[in-house]
Structure formats: C-alpha cells, structure tokens
Amino acid sequence: MDEFDAIVVGAGMGGNAAAYRLAEKGASVLLVDRGKPIGSKNLSGGVIWGHELDKLLGSDWYKEAPVERPVTRKGVNMLTEDSEFSIGFERESWRSPPYKGWIVLRAKTDPWFASKVEEAGGMVVEGVNVESLAWEDGQVVGVEQAGETIRSNAVIIADGANSRLSIDMGLREDTGDQIPPHAGALGIKQIIDLGEDRINERFNIDNGAGVAHEYVCGWTEGEVMAGGFLYTNKDTISLGIVIKIDSLWNQEKVSHRIMEEFRTHPSIAKYIEGGKLAEYGAHLIPEGGLDYVPRRYGPGWCMVGDAAGFCFSNGMVIQGMNYAVGSGVRAAETVLEAKQAGDFSAKKMSSYKRALQNSYIWKDFERFSDMEEVVWNPRFHKTYPQLVEGIFTEMFTQDETPKEKTRDVVKEQMKRLGISPFTIGKDAFTAGKNL
Ligand SMILES: Cc1cc2nc3c(=O)[nH]c(=O)nc-3n(C[C@H](O)[C@H](O)[C@H](O)COP(=O)(O)OP(=O)(O)OC[C@H]3O[C@@H](n4cnc5c(N)ncnc54)[C@H](O)[C@@H]3O)c2cc1C
Image (cartoon, rainbow, N blue to C red; front, side, top):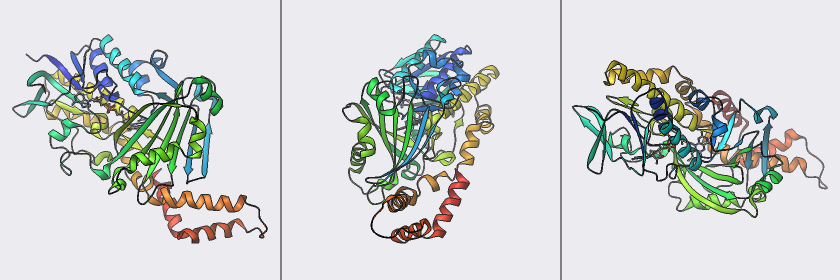
C-alpha cells in the first residue's frame, strides 16, 4: 500500500500551496524540504502580487501571516552612473483591502505557510534533500532519499529554479544539468537593517505603507545587463539586482561588483546610509517561459512554480510567487481528481495542463512570450538611460550659450549615442506590443 496520496518536494510558495490544498481536502500528504528550518534556502525580492493566497487561505491571510508592508508606492527608475530618471505611482487605497502587493521575507513566510499545511493535517519534514523520484513500470511511485523509498501515488515537484528532479528526468535536454544561460537570470539580494523610524522618515511613509522600486542599472560595463530592486520591509530594506546570465559570460566576478555599485550608487546610498548588512544571498530566476521545460506532468507527477518555469519579469515587476501558488493549487486539484478516480496515469494527470491552459497563468506566459526582446534589449539597459540623461541635462542646464529647441537637443543626443529615430520607433513599437 502507498504511504501517502502525495509527496510534495519543496516547501516554497508552490509546494506549500499544493500541500495545503491537498491536506485541507483530506488527502494524506508529505511535504519535504531540504532547508532546515524551512525557508532558509529561499530568496525573493519579494513582493507577492496577485490574489492566489486570498483564494487558498481566505482574504484575511495577511492578518496572521508574517508580512512586512503593503505596497503603496511603486517606482520605476533608470540609473546611469550619476543620474536617475524616475516614474512614481502611489495609491492611497493600496493601504487597505484588497491589497495589491505585500512585501514579504521568505525566511518568515515559508515556515509560516508550512505550519498552515500542518494545521490542515499534512506532514511536514524539514532538512530532507530528495535525491530522485522513485519509478516502477514507467510510473512515479514516490521519492528516493538516503537509499530509502518513500512511497506515494503522486509526487508534486516544487523544488525551484534549478530543479534537480526535472534535470534527472532529462527535461532540460538542451544544457544537460543546468539552467540554460539564455533562459535565466541571477538574483543577488542583501537585507539591510535600518530600523522602522529611519525607513519611515527616509521614504516619507508610515507603518501602514511600503515602497517597491525597480531600477534599470544603466551604468554596467560591456555586455552586462542588470535590473535592481529596493523594497521596504518593517525595519529592514531588501536590496538586490537581477542579472541576465548570458550577458555575464566571460565577465569574471562581475556580479558581486554590480551589487556593490548598485548599493553605493548615490540614488540608493542615501536610503540605506547607516544601515547594517544583515543577510546576503543569491538565487537563480527562470525566465524561459513556456519553452523552459517540454513537459510539466507525467505518470504520477506534476511540476509547479519555478521548477516548471512559471516566473516572469517585465522590468516593472518580478512575479513568481503568485504563479507558484496558482500552479501548486492546480497540481493539487489534479492529484485530488486522480485519487478520486484511482488513476494516476499520464492521461489523467494531463488535466493539470488543461487547468493551467484555462487559467491566467498560461495566458500570461503566452501573451508575454516576446517580453525578453524588451526586458533584455541592450538599448533599454544602456543607450536609453544615457539618452534620457543627456536630454534632461541639456534641458535643465542654463549656461551662456543660446537655448536650443527640445527637438534639436533630442537630435543631438541621438547623434552622440549613434541611435536613429527608426531604431527608437522600432523599440517603442516592440515595447508597446509586448508590455
Ligand atoms: C532576487 C529575486 C527576487 C525575486 N523577486 C520576486 C518578487 O518580488 N515577487 C515574486 O513574485 N517573485 C519574485 N522572485 C521569484 C520568486 O522568488 C519565485 O518565483 C518563487 O519563489 C518560486 O516558488 P517555488 O515554490 O516554485 O520555488 P522556491 O521558492 O525556490 O522553493 C523551492 C523549495 O524547494 C526546496 N528544494 C529544492 N530542492 C530540493 C530537494 N531536492 N529536496 C527537498 N527540497 C528541495 C528548496 O529548499 C525550496 O524551499 C524573485 C526571485 C529572486 C531570486
């Protein structure tokens, strides 16, 4: 007899959501994570955008969860070495329900979420590094760990961006054993202890408000392309960068240096001055979209969250946690249907794909499949920040020379940077089409 209806590998947002839905519907579920404590291996910016948690846990979940602050102000900023061009958006109603985004720290939210799984009747075991799936006659029948097989009717794979289990199954054929460089980004994050009062004073907010800034890091050397983020927690700041992996090729040790340049940039340094570095970490981000893995289900298994490639960035937000929860819940529902039918075959598990295709998750990834062209267009990272810097510097500087018309300033700056109106028009069209 199988020991569990389902084993969920990984207690991040996706795995916790899947295990919770299974447990609350009465299935026997084992949730395992290599982290001890749970959450210790996990890293996000992190703003949870979207409402999957409302649907799963009830719209009051944030009252009990260890959330930091609601996002009430959003900023998108272009940085060059010594300039900043910003667009800000603030909404008073974002400080009350229904909240749009919650700033969270995963080291706090993930163990809390796992405790909800336990409350719902699931078994949670931390510090277990699953080595592989267990197979019998072409069907997944559990997981292998330390030479032992733990049996289940189904396994939900929620082991994150560099999913060892999907690599073992040969689902990342193009690069063998790693995240394909063109389909991933490297996230580096620091948590800076600043204190609640200093945060409120420097960002001109109170305890019921939070700030989420994204940055284009337009000063980086050579081919390197990076974006940055700064989020206000209760009494710390989450500060980080996201670098396109293939733009890092042959650039030794550059990632740490970019983080340092970002942290000490005048637009950032003023916010964090006097703060103490409390944590430092790095994590991969899958950006390959629907092409990331060829299959997300099979006989006795489903794959969710980052492992399945459901993470997305458009330069204004990074979104992965909501998709992880959404795909986790849909995988759990597929397993529940399979349990009811007593059939865990690939055909039965394929209803997971249909559930995804009928949801906003698949539609988002289809709609934004060409987003890469915009987000990782070198001109958006290098040329346009310099163009904006040049234009505004000319327009706002008064010296003894006669003033030029804005049109002529723009033309001159385009000539200086060697960019034509046609290229700008083409990029604007592509951005308009894809954003
Ligand atoms: C720097 C950075 C900033 C980000 N910012 C945001 C943001 O602001 N908003 C947002 O929505 N998303 C953001 N993301 C993306 C988001 O963090 C992910 O999309 C999300 O965490 C995916 O959830 P998951 O459950 O699929 O995977 P994860 O959260 O990575 O969880 C995977 C879990 O599996 C466990 N595990 C792995 N292998 C094994 C194994 N063999 N055995 C047992 N356990 C295992 C790990 O310990 C981990 O707990 C960011 C990511 C990074 C790196």
